[in-house]
Image (cartoon, rainbow over the protein chains, first blue to last red):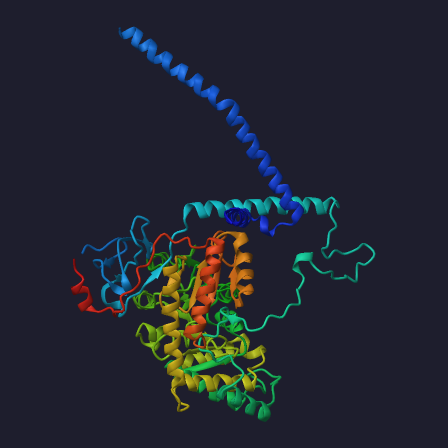
Length: 76
Length: 519
């Protein structure tokens, strides 16, 4: 029962996505093309975030801690 | 109570029509600030005693997220449009358009358009009509109007086959013109076969080169066409914005014509009674005050407001309690409230006599058909109460009640509705392009016919569904329609309004209410 409600909710969500991005007025092959391109872009964004954000954060942390460390080293 | 910008005097929060709160007045509009809690309409009286009744007009701002998503939607559609054009040009896709073949330079075959634009051939019965301009319900096939028209049809036939100035002037036309003049409260009137042609063919007869036309931003295509055909200089003022109009008038009087600095021969202000895309009503008391101050002429197009506004249906002039003699040219159409076709122009006798000889419509256009004339005569007499029944008065009251009820319920549900509280034209904002078609189709699935409008009839992101209320709608019909609109609004997520209207206190607004609710 719950599973059906979840499915209904997702199909409603998909309908909202179609309405907002005008997929409902496109032809089926245009729709699949648009969905494919969008999913590809989203997948690339997620991959980049997963691979690169931790490294960037670590570098930024080191950079700022070095400055603060240098500053405290000077002041002491 | 310090006057706000633009010389408007704001009363303290008052429980008129339920609620009120802070708003800022800009460009003559009242914009309720998003911060105002629990949605409230500001009651503004402008310029002291010109308005005898509250003038509640609101155009809620587009929510930022909705605007961004609408542009995104249009961007996607544009990209795909270019892609399809590219494919068609390089013949990767079969082009269904009508094109001339090289062998057939003389004969061109017309093909059907795209696959998706074919008529479905479905016939749907028992649909509630929320889209036609049938304000007083005279467009029906039973009743006294239909019987009278049938009788005249047997007597006169259908075709006149001649113009007003030749053999086409029947006694029916004279009777109609006397009746229209009496109905409006003017000296004389003249009628024409087509409402659009009334505007586009008579403005050139009234103004010419060396005259100035001040026309509202959102005027109808017929007024724009008439203004352009006349050859006069056209200047546009912001929609219903009296500060903009006054500035243009001042500049016109002070600077005169562009290069020679001579005074303008005539200054004509073109406004409409009700603007059908916005549902707003013209600020007529202020326009007339400005017209008298700067000695300009006023041309009022009452296509949608005649029969629909005013306690006895005499239009926007009666709605504000003004004198019809103040309006120089009163134009209107019989298409909407009277259930017929054609237009009229009313005014002083000299004006109408001049138009009889100089109007293009009188010289070239065939006159009105006799059964149509009889329909107008019967419906006008019914509205005035001269046929012995009180049907006219009831219709007008029913329309006013329907308007207030429908608008209030839609606002309570959370839709964004444009326009004045008393206008029977109700635009409901949709914004996103895909929702335009989806709304129309979903409503038709539920047996309600609506008209949806997008670009270029409206600004690009402000597409809307336009409901036209009628005296023929009973409360049950309206309740059914409102239920379906609620459902479709939830399905398509159309309830954008950030102000929820508090359900109204059923008290009429008067001075005592103001005193009592002072906190």
